[in-house]
Image 1 (cartoon, rainbow, N blue to C red):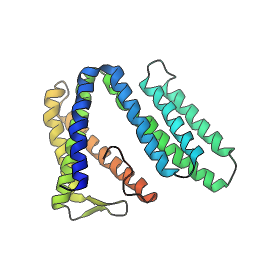
Image 2: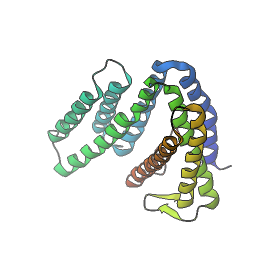
Image 3: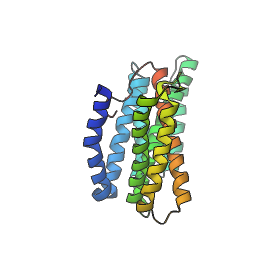
Image 4: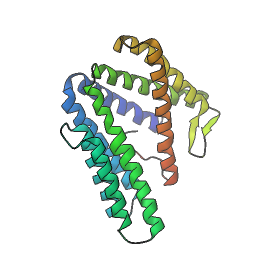
Amino acid sequence: MNAQLRSRVITAALGIPLLMGIIGWGGAGLFSLLVFLLTAIVLGEYFFLVFRDLKNERILGIVLGILLSLGIVIPGYPAPGLSLSLVVLLSFSVYLFSGGDLEKRYRHLGWTLVGVLYLGYLFPHVALLYQFREGRAWLFFLLLVIMTGDTAGYFAGHRWGKTKLYPEVSPGKTVEGAVASLAASVLAGVIGGAFLLPAISRAEILLLSLLLSVLGQAGDLFESWIKRVFSVKDSGSLLP
């Protein structure tokens, strides 16, 4: 067992039971807290990656991302739309009047908004699933589809992968692995959805599973793109 696989197995063995327990019995408050903590962690990793030697830009990005995520995970906090508008306007203002090279400021603004919007705004929305009717079932379904596809893609890619999917961005990902991930996600979604979400039609479950798989793989490629841009092999030191 190589080091990467061992790390994945250990993370899964420790993290999955904890996550399942929080979803099943922890309640909306504890789950929202977990989502917020994970958001803070990934924001920290992202901004330490893109602004390794720029402390002020790093702090700004992390703080803005955390403030934006609070508008999603905390009931009664300013509405997410208002928080989003304020954070974007504040980012524009800070970089517009901060001084220094104009092109560099514009580039740093882009890096900041990517992290704040992708990690601080989009990711925390998973906490809102808990508030849906059958919210816990939806969360279990989401995890089932994504984790099954990720596992199948990893092993199929290592075993049969020959055709590179996007070598400029992610040399390790293959077409065979992507297809296996897609097929496994759809299969797991259709089977699991019949038990977890019986009120949803099979056609809707199939389409949703397909969409989740495509978005998940696109997210993996986006993360790999960031790593290539900043010349690092692994952007996640905590969760593989």
